[in-house]
Image (cartoon, rainbow over all chains, first blue to last red; front, side):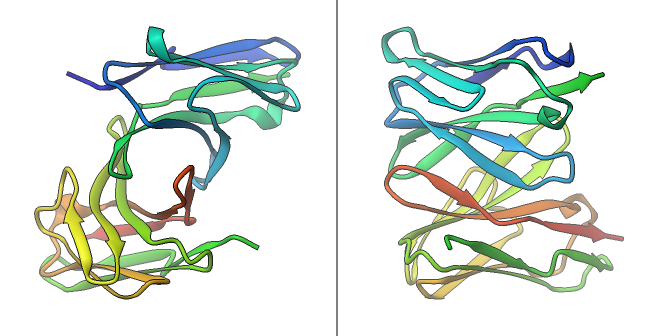
Length: 108
Length: 110
């Protein structure tokens, strides 16, 4: 089965609303990372977060290892937040497994 | 400035032609990757390289080979490209903590 599952698959927000994106993994991990993929395709690393909570501006990532889940919280969403959010887990030996992503659209 | 570069950014080839995709990084990372991304399938690992001439198959290596002769440079080769290899290809390099991605190459095989 899939090792990394992301939910929801897609999401539409009104500008200013908050969002919580989920990443669940079925295997133990060495580390995990959240990425933002811009509409034009390039990938940007948002967080390296193997455990605990990290915040950067309006983004907060929380990883709970024993529950095998990580979340990405976006507060006060902006139109420029639109794109795809990917989580990836490092299963060991530097190999990463990616989720299918959450496609976010923020509308005015 | 930490950077992963890819060349070319766009490429159109005919079925049966050979394809060379090139990737460079300026972070002296030992580990580098080639992925492909297709709609609905996410990022799939083709090959991983742990250092010069130390390459390992990923999840979908069939139809691809790689070359790494310098630590900063990693190539993906398609010998006799097939139409089902039309995709977006990403190169990445990794520290022990994080992956860094190149901008991607959009390959179309006609």
